Length: 192
Ligand SMILES: [Zn+2]
Image (cartoon, rainbow, N blue to C red; front, side, top):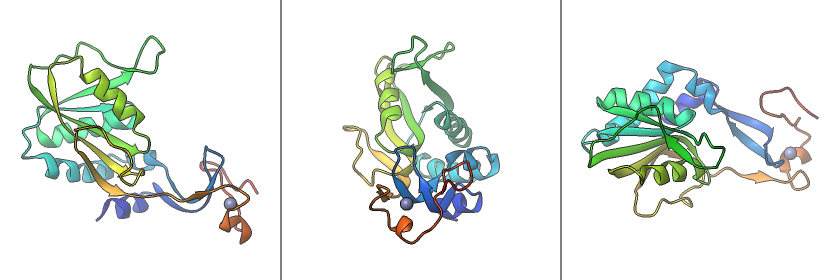
C-alpha cells in the first residue's frame, strides 16, 4: 500500500470541501493524527523510512513534538537505534530543546523525521538544536512533502514518502463553493 492508500484507509486523507485554518478553501485535508493514533498503520508507514535508511548506519532518530516523536520512536525501533525528541523550548521562545538527560555519542549519525512538511519550521528548529550536539545529520525524512519540493534544508538531503501540492482558494474564487458543495471545517460538521 502506498502512503496515501494507508492514510485514506485510516481516514487521515480526506477529500471534500474544507475550510483550512488559513481561511482558504481546499478539496483535500490531512488529519495526521488519524494515522498517528493508529499504531499498526503508523508502524507500516514507518517501514518506508526504515527500508530507505537501513544501510545508512543511523545511530539516533530524532523527531520534533508531537508527530515527529511518535515517528522517531517507531523508526528507531525498526532500525534498532536510539531515538531522541526535540520539544518546544521551556523558556517560551520559538526554539527547540532536546532535554530529559539526552546525550549523543560524538559523531553520531542522526536521521531527523517528521510528519507533514509545509514550511519546515519544526524540522529547521530541530536541526538548529542539533547543532549544539556533536552529531552528523544524515538526512531529513518526512511522510508528506506538501511544499512539493520548495522547502529545503541546506546541504541536508530531504526524503519524503509522498509529495502533495495542495491547491487552495479564497472563498470568492473557490470552485467548490460555486458548485454549492457544503463547506466543512475539519473536526466539525458542515459550516454552510
Ligand atoms: Zn469553497
